[in-house]
Amino acid sequence: MTDDGAAQGARAASGTLLVLAAAVLWGTTGTAATFAPSAGPIAIGAAAMGIGGLLQAAVAIRPLLRDARTLRRHPWMLGIGAVSVTAYPLAFYLGMNLAGVAVGTVVALASGPIFAALLERIVDGTPLDARWFAGAGLGIGGTILLTLDGAHGPQAGGGGSGDAALGVALALAAGLTYALYTWAVRRLMRGGVGSRAAMGAVFGIGGLLLLPVLMATGAPFLEDPRNLGVGVYMALIPMFLGYLAFGAGLRTVSARSATVLTLAEPAVAAVLAWWIVGERLGALGIVGIVLIAVCLAVFSAPARRGRS
Image (tube, rainbow, N blue to C red):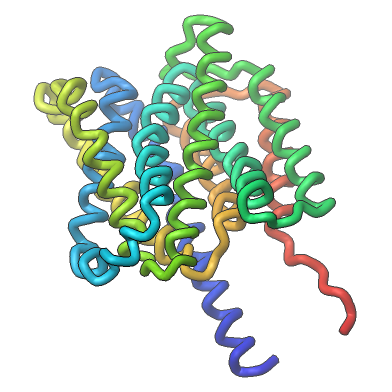
């Protein structure tokens, strides 16, 4: 291997580790949210991504000023990314509240790679090979089994099968918006915007859009110190630090690969939901998680290269 090839491999490995680190941090959010039930899922989502997004912009002031002219050349990407950042936490936390921590997180994150690959295929013309169809089939099958299992822990909203179905639908919407803002940030980087500026712009605008939601729903954070502690943790650790790592990883990891790597998040979330929250999964749910794990392995395996 040449020196250039070794350096490129090291950068790719570093990017992969950064994205995985972000996924582990994000995997704690569902369980953390259960410690502030009176805050409500909309307030939790608005606080986590709203404040976290504004912090992303605050630490990227210099890169934002440096890349302002380049950013202005991509208004559609900025708009798509910012609106997706705004919608994602509202759909994710409300869906998780209705479907349960394990199911809501797994459905949202398992659908992300599929949506991301379809975006790259439809918009960027990236071909989908047999491995993608095999992995997507496993992921979809696992998601269906989790939905049929209808797992509800003690913290799930769970008013019945209708609530569970709505929760799964919202989790799928979260998966789509997650794929959209990941793709948009990656496109901005490919257009010459630095990673910190791209993340700061997209998440900063998204954070601003979430402020009215936080103002309307955030009173419980001021009424209960535990709610406030959860909100501060969510904004600083998973959202701020997690997305700093994620943005750095996107320098060398494609949007499709990044969304696949973050399937580690639902695994962390499911374990924490079982260990701390007390959620239980039936046989179908366990098989579903296994299928999603196999989906992750299929997507993450290095592609075979033809002989030169």
